Image 1 (cartoon, one colour):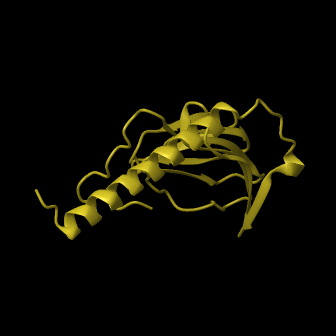
Image 2: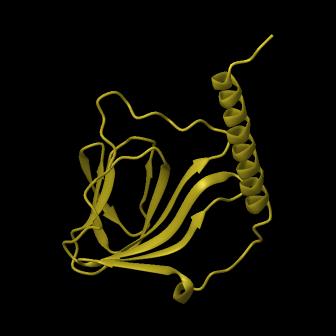
Image 3: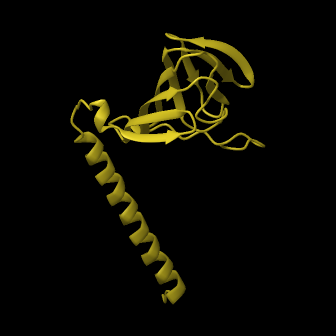
Length: 160
């Protein structure tokens, strides 16, 4: 039986690609498995600044159970927001630790104050705006869980 060059090339290319994916997956898992517990002072966080806000990114990588995950803290000045309400496939918690503002959840607006928590399910629009007179500070935990398929964007939805 003679195998055509095209089929040989396809088989070899597929094998190389699968080997690369398996190697990357093994490396990623090993890296996450080997990530030790740590403490990160605020002055070591990655800082991003915009119009009326500062974001401290403490962690943006994989853990044993997440791929990827983001942990950060935002400081938003009066009458500002980091970005308008948005949607994405990640799950997310936002916890206000200082100030007052407004949550926007699926187009509905709710008052937000220190101690309030927002959970955003995948593809649910969400955001927070400072409507108070002092800085609004919130902590964010955003992640994809390993072993759980990423939720597809609903028909007709745009990701932001």
